Image (cartoon, rainbow, N blue to C red; front, side):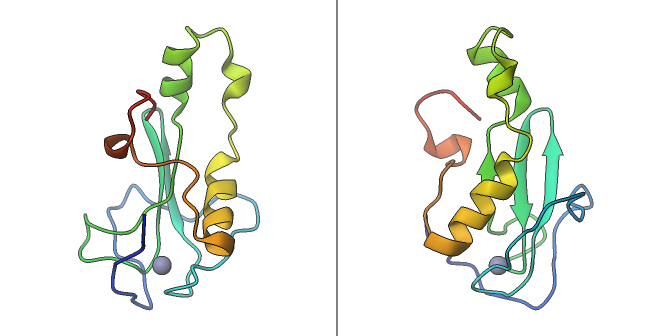
Length: 111
Ligand SMILES: [Zn+2]
């Protein structure tokens, strides 16, 4: 997935996104911002300065805790990595590779 969004020097996303609580986050190679993040039971995603509008912006994703719960029947919650979003983000910044595609681009039922 390419980042085809226009780069801006500021974030523009819904209020659910906020500054990450912890960890070192690299800057987006396109807009130069560290991302705001939205982590909730059903998803994890980032928002940087690459956007078209408040609702349509570039995002890196990580598997949600409910997705892990569903596919492991709640028996392997250790597979949920609370730091995965940061790792996926930093990996994308360094390599351009997306480690976890958005649910709409997947066939394995994870989200
Ligand atoms: Zn960006």
